[in-house]
Image (tube, rainbow, N blue to C red; front, side, top):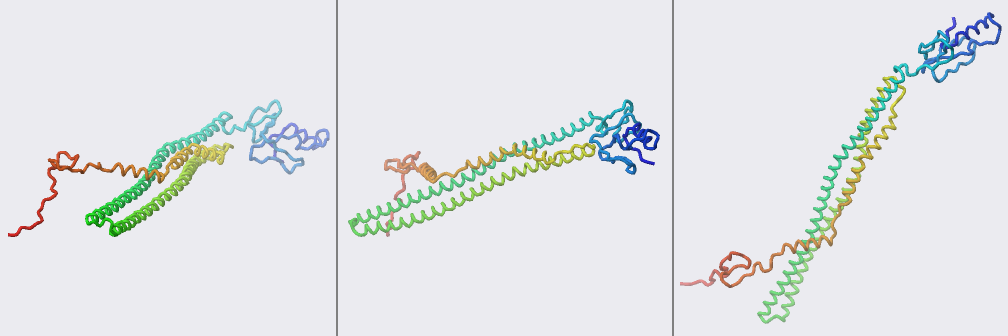
Length: 362
């Protein structure tokens, strides 16, 4: 016995069948003519392929032919009177259109919540990252200040060393000249010899100071160069750190989106989360929120500059001048009570000569 065809117009089929067996006016009828096939998505059309007829085309939307007692898989069991074709409700399996829309709205809200929470995570990182950046910039600034202090100290040492040597040479030559003058030899070759000797000593001492200054300057320049390289590396690392933060936020969001997609599948919804699109949107939003951090750090580091050599020398001279004692501080007077000028109360008589070097004999 032939299988039935779900959703066909039974009346037409019977008339054609009668014609086929001679019970009605003979005509070239095909039992598959004037058929409407009902089919659910994923179902196979139930037709008798052993019977003669043409190709049946399944419509894109499940339909049911009314006026028949046979319903296809898309039929909802509605009225069979009146004839004509009605569309099966594709949302019946979800409990109706309203329920379907409610489910879809819940899932859309879930996706929006993932996006918003990802943005909140980025903003939390923005706050803590801003504080960390200020500390980092402060640390780099202090490192630069340490290098600058070394440079100023190097200039101070050179300046003070030069002054000390000039003072030593000047005092030596003057002392030698006084000695020669006391011996009436001020115009002798001895005066020139004393001057040459102190000149040679002065040059040697100044060369030593100059060499030490150059070595310190090289060390300071190397330290400054190393700091510049470290700062450049810190900037690159921070750029990658921002990207890693955005990737971590995106990965966390992806796990949440995958859970939502699984729930949609479990609910037999035909919709799916546009995973790649949502991930890109979340990552772009996170990078946009976190971008001020990179600008803050890079701008702060770029503003840290080493002081120039002229500024260092000027500061060194200022410091050396500030440390100079009052030239009248250790002056003394022979007036009683004898004491150092500026020292109050007076320190009493100065014990300049306290011992008689001549021995007494019995």
